[in-house]
Image 1 (spheres, helix red, strand yellow):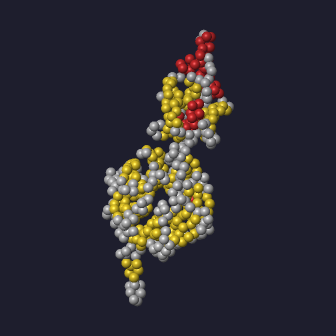
Image 2 (cartoon, rainbow, N blue to C red):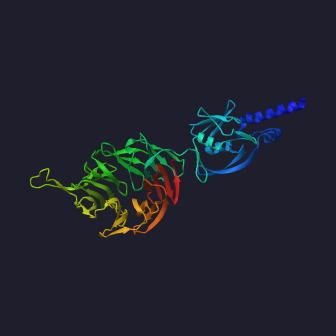
Image 3 (cartoon, rainbow, N blue to C red):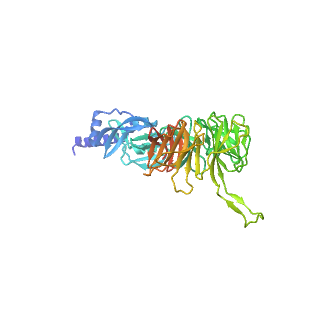
Length: 477
């Protein structure tokens, strides 16, 4: 081989090394090289330049790409910048760290081998230098730095959505959603409107569930001793309310957030209230009727509506022997009652006498009581029924079998299953007119509605999804 030929071979080898390793020191940005080097790289590595658009943390972003060996690689400097990651050179390797400082990737141009948090992995295609910039596999870098790729349109999250089974959902006043991650310990997460926007809100076992105030600013719950607490749904701060340790269930806030009403006693035989500011308990009803539940208070605080679960009545003959004992179930079942809170000493009045099961009672602004009626024999579909202040009753016509309802924005938000198997959500006004909000083929196990009724949060298959203006956003994996 002639001397000039040998020199040419050596120079070509040197150029490949320069492109594959030495350029690591400047891979995060432009590399200044002689034109001969650029020409050699283009001749040696067959690539095709391009641009690919993604939504990154909610913002539209275009990345420079190259196709190398049939695999699309992305500009590492652009990726790092969009994810808020840092880039540094360390002993001939390029080191990337996520913005939280949790994950570290070390790689070299031209090498398929890399480490993620000190564990060795391999790229499908080695990082490639082209035009003075380094290009890498998108998924390996994004996932390695704790992010996530998903969806249509294409989206990149700097922080991956949390994974697991979620339940017990509530809306907060700031538009966030609180949800529990199922597990051995209590973990309540707070989710923003966009995927990847979340944080651990509380790990307080006592606060695993709570009754939310009408303005969605606070939650109320009791501990195992019956002591009442209030949690701030913005800061997570918890404070006890009073010192009363009697059994309290069905916590219900007044419209102004100053009073919490509850059913009191081991047998749910009383209705009482407690002042949030000073913790004073006031007894409102002690009629010795047991098994009260589903307490609701009108917006003006003048009326209470609740359910009484009436059990069978035991009867004996004159001898009161065991053999003569019988139980009369003719009047057993759930009935709605109302109590006038504005009149001292007022007696409860029955709102219903029917034998259907009654769920989710709500009091509308005009005094109408709405509830879900379910046939105990399962022979007819569940429906929404109304009881007007004058005692007249009616059905609300919907094309679903209702399985949930909650008051919001002066009316009712209801969900249920249609004949075609889809789950549908309706906004029902006080007059009874209904507007469909959303439908899905997914099975819905839990629903929560924002204070103004404009947004829904649902659980399907353990995943948290929010719905607004007919569009859904999945916040967990």
